[in-house]
Length: 326
Ligand SMILES: [Zn+2]
Ligand SMILES: [Zn+2]
Image: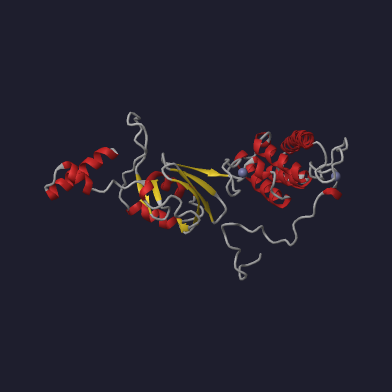
């Protein structure tokens, strides 16, 4: 039922109950509830709730009528929505169910934080596990966003949860861990065939980010060991010397491919930067992959931020001191 029809039906009901004329009854009949009338927009922005609370609403609340504000000729009627109290906005049933699917590993107790909201358009929530999602309100759909707060880009892939720009800002420890996880997943997907582990875009993306951080040597070594086999394991894993040779050749081809990608990225960053961002000196001709590409030498790289404390997160409090440290 469109908003107009719903309104007419409500006025008729008032007429029937009061015996008033249509225009009089219309004055007494409240406007149908819309997303915008559910409190000022952004009411709930900054608040947290559990996935369970949102699912509970989705399972129990009735469908709501909203005025999408679209041209009446427009055939698309919009998804079925309900007025969520935890979001302070209308949200499609299907969008909530899709979010629950995305968060199935994290579980129903996952804490969600409402980062932003555009009523009848979209909302952004972040999970306590740092994942971020855009909830589409005009359709039953959800998509994951880069983990950097307020970034509206997509993550590179399931195992690289940042966009390219923010991946390149991750410190080398994060890049090494991400490369290891990505490599293991890649090797699992590929099975025993070494050639099918070569040439993946994910490896190229990780390597480019590593060049920006001066972490290429560590990242490429962890990545190749995880994605293929560490050299000292190859003869144990492959009892047939032909298979062992095929694995070693695949690793060398991939190492060369990634090296070329890394060097191209190193030159690209230096060309774009023009000169060392710390001392302003021109870059030397050679390639030193242990130095972040925007600096001329290790001496120019600023020391890491004081204290090894994790970066304060604007949304989530630091873990309590009694949390296990290892
Ligand atoms: Zn990003
Ligand atoms: Zn310098």
